[in-house]
Image (cartoon, rainbow, N blue to C red; front, top):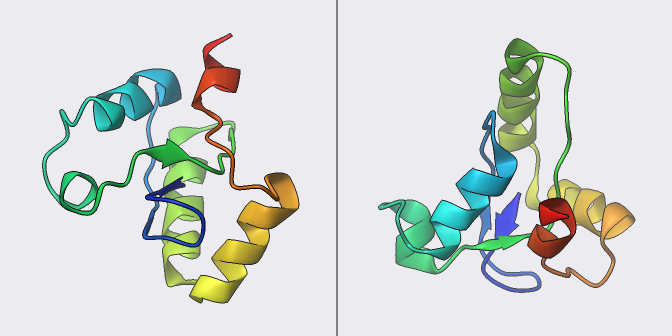
Length: 89
């Protein structure tokens, strides 16, 4: 999940290369929703075994109420820190 800021606009997506995809969002190389709303901070992620499992999970999360998504983020990342640097190591 990407966010524009703490409690800001959220974006949920799926990718086979998280580091590259977040980098592209940060460089504003992905046009559309995330560029328009300045959504480029990685605040939550999950690694799943298959792309099909990831797509299923993405669809599930997109159906969730915002409060549930916020709670999920805050369980892993209570400060809403940008986790991008931690996945680049």
